[in-house]
Structures are given as structure tokens and as C-alpha cells.
Amino acid sequence: MLRFSQDIKLLLEKLASQPLTIGDILAETSERGFSLVIALLVLPFLFPMPPGFTGPLGVGCLLLSLQMVMGRRSPWLPKKIAQFQFPHRFVLQLFHNLRRVTRVIERIARPRLTAFAKSQITWRLNGLCISWLTILLISPIPFTNPIPTIGILLLAVATLEADGLLMCISYILTALITLIVLSIGYTLWQAPQVLPSLF
Image (tube, rainbow, N blue to C red):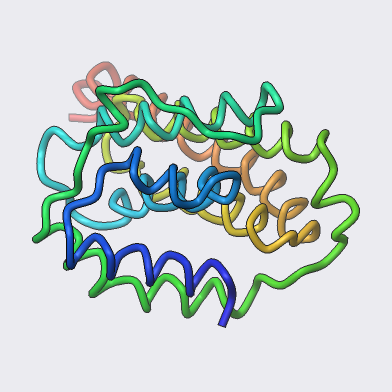
């Protein structure tokens, strides 16, 4: 089992048994907290979410990824976001669906091109891609949440597992996701003007 699968499972088990804030999780995981907490913050976007979650989860992910761009290795979040707690019921939903996510990830991720994966430039580049994908994630374009979420998860896992090959694939995927999300946004923006002419 990958470190990511083990860590995220243990994390969700802890969250299910006791209330932990995002700040508590960061304090426990240190540098690994970047990848783990980013993954934890975006996992909910793969599934139906209660209202009011998008803001704190998205902003938290964006702030962490921007710190990666700046080369920080110790994660920090403002108090308001650091004190955010996942509702117990929601944690159980994530835990129930976790195996579906980790099953796919375990097939594609493993340590490869580790010198490239562990370089400081790569760390910053991963943060830049995650930041951009997070902006796409929290942008008000309907029906697109899972698309950038997949890219963010792959980059978080690749960073945690030192998988340089998966990182390179994720960079290409970031460009494709950008095209897809912006195309959907443009299509929806044009729809009010185009639809009347069709009918």
C-alpha cells in the first residue's frame, strides 16, 4: 500500500474518532502536511458536498499551494481556516468512498525519477500547478469541480510518493484540464446568446 493510502486512511480514521482541526493535522504531519492536507481538502470535491464548504476548503488549498510556490516546507494557514473542522458525518462519507480513490492511485503511483521529484524547482512547479488548478476548482463554472480535483490529487500523491513520472504526466494533464474547464465555461457563457438562434 502506498504511503498516501496509509496516511490518508489513518487521517480519516482519526477524524472519525475525534474532532481535529486542519491546524491539528498540519501540526502532526509537518512537511508531508502539504500533500496530505491538500489531498484532504480537495477529496470532498469528488463527491456531493454540503453548502458552505467550497470557500474554506478551496482557500486553504490555494494558500498551501502558494506556500509551495514560495519554497516553504513548513505549512501555515490563517487561524480562521486552521480551525475548520470536518463534520463527523462528512468524514464518514469520505472514508466510505476512500477505497474507490486509492484503488486507482495505487495502480499508477510509485517512486520514479526521484532526483527530479525531490528537487526544489519541482516542488515550486508542483505548487504552481496546484494553485492554478485550485483557482479553476473554486471558479464559478458549474459541473467542473471533479475535473481540476483529479489533477490536484495526482500532483499531491506524486509529491508525497516522489513520483517524477506522474508529476510530468500531471503537468500535461494540467494543460488539458485548463482547456476543458475554460471551454466549458466559454460554452456556458455563450449559451444564452446561441440558444435563442437555434430555436
